[in-house]
Length: 213
Image 1: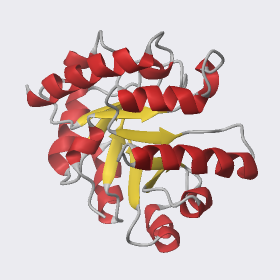
Image 2: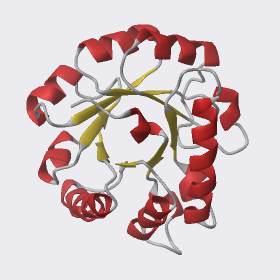
Image 3: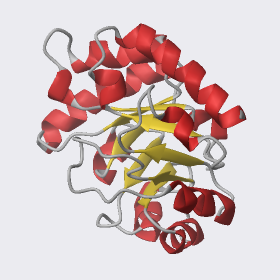
């Protein structure tokens, strides 16, 4: 499946670190109301049964808003909940094996950090790429920071949508201007916000302006 570039504009990646006042479901719905164009369920602590139950709920919510739903890393859960896609990292299952398990209909996203990794991922069937970390991020403290030049080279080297990730916020999003990126994937900038819906409205507008510049 080819992925629409507009899907990348405001790509929300969940993190239950900021749940409490609201459930993760409520936070995701607020992000969708505010204009999130894609949702990735990223869970590292839940067991498979709990993950599937949560994925089924949030998948149904995303369908209601007609926004693609992506599961991070867990291919079996993605298949079971009929997710629109699966996102894998360099240390996860290889893209070609993911495709064998998930079939042609599922979107596959891959995290890459160099032109070589990007070209290889696309050759093996990736439908979009996540590139980062672009800035320092508490979400992944050991992430290597990539230069804007590497991001630009990756965007120029592939013909699939590219989303930038890692420490991106309203304060630094315009530093990605002119890179060729199709949007931004955000974790804390969305889910740590006091008012997620209104923050997403702002971030969606900023992303559209950055991409168009």
